[in-house]
Amino acid sequence: MENWFKILKKHSLTFLTVLVMLLTSACAKDGNPWGIADADPSTFGGNANDGVIKVLAIGNSFSEDALESNFYDLAKATGKTVIVGNMYIGGASLATHKNNVENNTSAYQYRKITSDGVKTTYLTTSILRVLEDEPWDYISFQQASPNSGQLETVQADLPAVYNYVKARATNPNVKYIYHQTWAYAQTSSYSAFNNYNNNQTTMYNAIMNVSQNITSVAAIDMVVPAGTAIQNARTSALGDSFNVGDGYHLNTIGEYVAACTWYEKIFGVSVVGNTYTGGFSAFEVKVAQNAAHLAALKPFEVTSMSTYEAEPIPLTSAVLIDFGGNSVTPSWNMMSSFSEGAKINLKDSLNVFVGMSIEVINRFVGVNTNGSTGTVNSMNMPNNVSQRNFFGSAYLPFGSTITPTSDLELSGLLPDKSYSFSFFGSRAASGNRATKYTVTGLNSGNDTINAASNAVEVAVIKDIKPNANGKITISVTAGVGNDTSNGYFYINAAKITSN
Image (cartoon, rainbow, N blue to C red; front, side):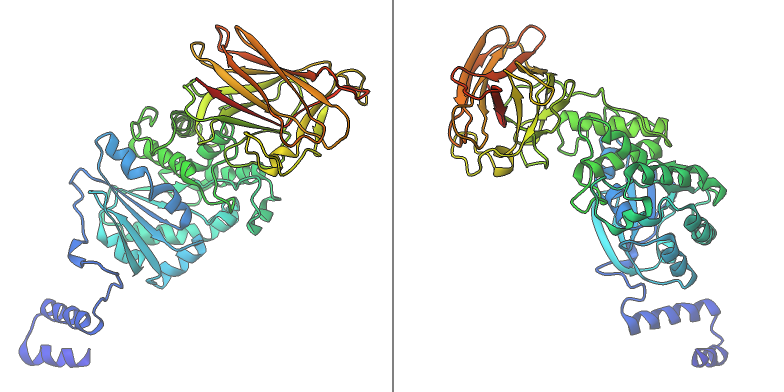
């Protein structure tokens, strides 16, 4: 630097000229002074008045889940153009961001989706450099998920990050967002779940407390309630099925829910009816879009979606039902409760909701876990399906419960279609445990198998038409020849197809 001032004095160069020379020298020395991988710096810098909505997240993998998939396409489907930036460090907390702005640290991956939908990742980038890249219309902050429900951590670190960004944002009309993230899946084994007593509701309520108090921490213009949208969706027939195996990152349908929430909040219009489906089934799209819309209406409380049901569609793949299961098996619907009123919505073996549901109308006695394994028949059951069952007691009470017949009701079938059924029943035992299955709609059929140590027999009933309301009843009881004193009967699994 001292040598440059000697040159300036000798040659009377302007300060601006020297500055250009300094920058040129730095580029020649370091090759990439911004620390940006595979990037042409001339592509940086946007126009504030070009009609493109520019959204920047200062976040981590949760902003990746919410914004790097689907959001661009949701906007495009309604004729809107966006640029999306994500300042990514895995697991980054507000404390991490605070340290990085205080030291102008080039520690981020800058993932940028440009207005043509092309995504580029720039490595070792600083927040300052990215604030200078575009006149961002929206800039969001979020807390790392382990601390997302701990208000004191947000109070400690958000103000410094917010003030740094506010002082350097190039768009005078920029709006600031707080990204309300989601509670973990109830089955999550992530150690940070201990912060919330390993309870999803406790974590959700803690996140809501932070969200509701965020404007007392920084001058936030908007909360994007992705956490409430996910929680809404969990009350639907889809259940707690929006996370990958780690129990805290979102799976593909979870990402779609979050992106729908961002879309509705950024553009101020309902996402319901958006034609970009992300490749999901009509029912999944309905749940996702409505979960986001309901969260936008009530961002700090759960809205039940238990009444949301899929529209009946023709079966192109079999519907497989596991009775008495204790863990979900791919391609199988798990029915774990045997009591009256227990009901699940059904998917086919390709994981598509088909608009059908099954409900216990007259209860079974309980669950038995001694069915056969290694079965060889047309049902192709894994062992965890074949070895568990609902059982009944037709002749005498088991404990205090007697079930002459246990009945299931299928709803949401198409009245102009015929349906065929296969049933498997098994319980390790000797003798005869004949179990009779009767299927009734406009017409009726039945078949009987001996469930005692059964690994081969399947009851088959074909071509049953639903009644005018699209319903069929399945009745299970002891069959002729059953020689148990209680008249025990069993249903382990069912397969439903349609003509």
